[in-house]
Image 1 (spheres, rainbow over the protein chains, first blue to last red):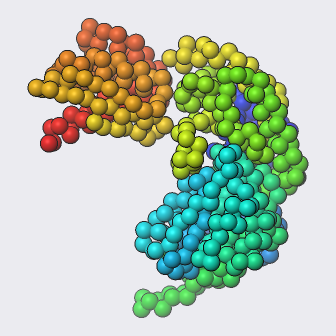
Image 2: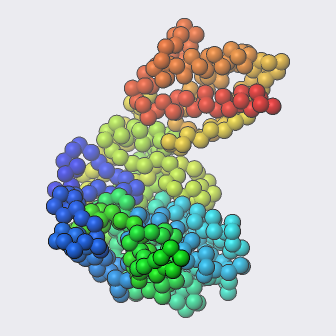
Length: 398
Length: 113
């Protein structure tokens, strides 16, 4: 749906790599061009019209994010450079102080690198224990396994709401309730979920949430860190400098600004934040529930079509999100991706930044399709036709 | 023995060489990689068996020159000439050069030991 809003889709291209980044609708591009062309001033410090306009536009996006993820206040929304930046701020700005020796962190092997490496790095300097909750035979996370993994030392559960290879939609609400009951902090990587389904940090008792604009129709270089106010108050800035200080002198007397500005040192990517705001407006105009229902239907169609081909191996056909990992039997995933590119079909080959998952799946590399609402059944049909004639794959790619 | 991960993609190849009296007497490889990487590795290894380290280095350099669009000796490459149009797909040059990079690592190890 809404394909007419994406100029690039007028080309003869099928874009199936939305898990990596999404396409951008014309309105998002226009909003950013409008800022850079018509009011490209810095925020929070100018007393002239275009600076005030830029500041207003920037802060309005914060309020849009509050509503979009059902947070309670603008103080809980920090603009970051993306999910990775957000995770690093949580782990090194907060958890480093919050955690004590012997504390346990629960993760899974299906997590993206940005929800594993900061923790691994922290565990080198702090005696915390990273434990991986076992996945089921479809590499999915079940609530029961989360319950079983919790001990009285568990201090944090850090999970993707939707994983980027398996694509299982995790029972975030139930895990959030469990965390509330047990006094465990709940960190959610929303990179793959916020663009595709409704997010409600209050209802789901999420203590920290991170996501990126570029996977939800917005620009690169912007993301969001949500944190409950009491935790963000305790989060030490990792970056110090302009914009985040109230006053300082050369003797070391420093006063930092209040939340959230304290955590946004330096000039932020203002035009890009404005682009994120427009992306949120656009997503809301379609409706997040409509988007997830459409993608679920499209994924079912994709799986049913692929199952008709006996040359295809599917790794996660049961998961509900629009993510599907597959291989052509006997063909290296990158060769498949290069073959598909010949027909202007964009898919991703590799381990998709979830490098620990290979220990579970016993396979290193897959091709991944990740759908969005602008993909169609017609595109899937074209893709299937190309796969059907893949016995001449090497003729095409070599 | 040496391993190379192609940083720009997902190719991953291990190569083992058996060298006796300065001559490569056996060679094998293992790993997961694209068609270009695996086939180039396979052919190159067959080519360097029976050669001295210096002869192998010369062959590898000649091969790399072809991939990088520099001057090279066609005659000496024999069937490796099938890769003479890889430069048309610049993102695949690294795939074709992966075996050379890995064998170079082995030679470097030997030189240093």
